[in-house]
Length: 275
Image (cartoon, rainbow, N blue to C red; front, side, top):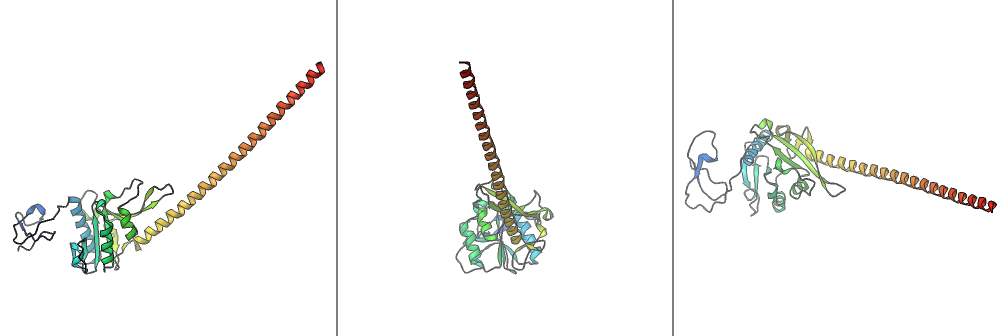
């Protein structure tokens, strides 16, 4: 019906050139549409496309909604000229989802704009699993999400397209005493094990993931304080043992010195008697 248009908004019309079932991007081609602007569409990779498919199915299941749309510009929802977009947006429950295939694309401006303009209950930010390891360095990009969401989320497709096998991992980043950053697991399970509350918050086994993340951070902090105190006690005990050893060594040195002086004195006395 010539109603399929390029998602970049240029106005180009796409038509089916082969097949009628299981259609994918290669089954379509763009027509020379009168009045179309310059196309800015960027082809997505397989992992990104499949991830959004799985996330859409998840949102449909958990929100019981058939009003979930992909690549929704925020200026179509809110009174703003900004053109940042949600990967998925549920018009029924007013809940948005941002998917990040590459963490380098996470911009503070985009995150802040989406959050500040948003009249929706919450925005869920999920990144591909390959973005999770910080190797002890400051997680410059993912910390932007953590500061907003309270934790970071990673989607792991497990190299297949089965919804039942897709996993969701929640983590937090904490700074250690040595200024390195440590990545802490909060929860990891199959995507379908997570729910979305009426307020748009992620829920796992009847608990808000934000609360689980907060508990994990507090537990790590408590454990860190305990480790620091235990190290202080060990260092103090080591210092005291060293002081005792040094004191004993000084006593032994003085004793040896005294014995040497006594031997010299006796030697002098013997020599004097002989003379």
